[in-house]
Amino acid sequence: MRGLQATGPRPTATSCGCVKPALETGNLLTEPIGYLESCFSAKNGTPRQPSICSLSRARLRIRKSIFNNPEHSLMGLDQFSHVWILFVFHKNGHLSCKAKVQPPRLNGAKTGVFATRSPHRPNAIGLTLAKLEKVEGGAVYLSGIDMIEGTPVLDIKPYIADYDSPQRLMEPLRDFNLPGAQHKPETEFWCGGMTDDCDQQQLPGCDEPQPDSSTEEKPKGPEDRTPEEKHREHDTAEILNSPRNQGERAAGLGLESGRGQSWSAVEEAIGSRHLEESSSEEGTEKRPRAGQEAEILQGVSGETQPGALRHPAGAAPEARHSVVPSWVREAPVPTLGVRFTPHAEMDLAHLSSDVSQSVFRYFRSAEEAKRAIEAVLAADPRSVYRRKLCRDRLFYFTVDTAHVTCWFGDGFAEVLRIRHASEPV
Ligand SMILES: C[S@@+](CC[C@H](N)C(=O)[O-])C[C@H]1O[C@@H](n2cnc3c(N)ncnc32)[C@H](O)[C@@H]1O
Image (spheres, rainbow, N blue to C red):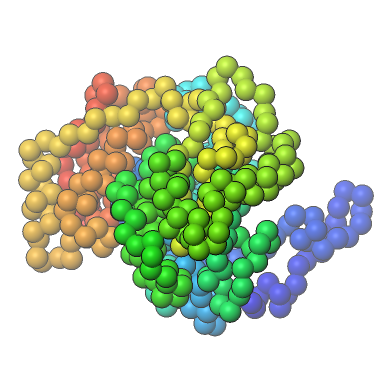
């Protein structure tokens, strides 16, 4: 990579007067790897967390000024279903932030900024888990995003359930993912995965599990798999990991016959390693459980590469649970019912039938646009201020090319008009 290395980290003077390289003092000269093209043009109406609106789409093109051949930097990324996106909240407006903030889900109550996902933080860095739809040349196509158009992106990292989700553990049985590699117990973990801990919403693709069609067939290596297959495997993993199916799965993976191991033997083997791992993490996992904390036994949804075995049942409880304050999942702010006036329905039909201009850039149909609008509004995108002090004001937002006008009543949002974003309002 050029640029940063060419100039090198700049030294920084510390309070004691010593001069240290900038990185050692935590000063990082960042350069966006790209600027997001998003279906949300402004903050208003943009979901507060990824996956609230699974149809929210974006494209990120890696800049040639970062890598001469951007596609090289994305090699292998298509083997993952989800990616972390690190970005700058570039539209925060001002750099000041408060130690205590009022997240909308707390409806006015305060909590420490570091206990929230507020955009207003000492370093305006955002972190989003997005679904990776595809990689094409030097660009990644994402969905389930909560960033606006033009957001400077600092980094992309693959989401790996083993590392990123405390309740998930996988034991690789066959390392066909690594070209030419043999099974490497204990040291190599490899899996795609999905979760969403932000808003109790399922990530796209999790709700229609597919039957485990072929346990006999030798699984394809990742290089052979299409993104659709990749996501289907993820769905399959959900079924496979249900306790009901563990036995079948073990059989399917050749544990009982092919490898001469019973499910319980495997479970025991993994369980003991699991215990070792979780005990080394005790400090972080075992927190006092105050009354207002919700202990969530997370779903078993997760993406598993064929040949990898997740350990769903015999895990130590602390590794299968993660703890969040109850307001994250049982917010005092209710989910809203969403309705469209006949006029808004007509607008949408009219918008999508307009042949004179390209209708949607990110949505594939009027139906998708409608579902996205519903998802955005159901999560009540209003600020606490608006919710409390401007209750009867109209609310506007733009998603893709649809400019939406709506209002909120008790427990519902109603869409009044949908116009093309280029039309004067
Ligand atoms: C609550 S933040 C959460 C972002 C990320 N998932 C996180 O946890 O860091 C999401 C909100 O940030 C705002 N936002 C998105 N992109 C932004 C940007 N580039 N600059 C400033 N605010 C942005 C939108 O209002 C969106 O609803």
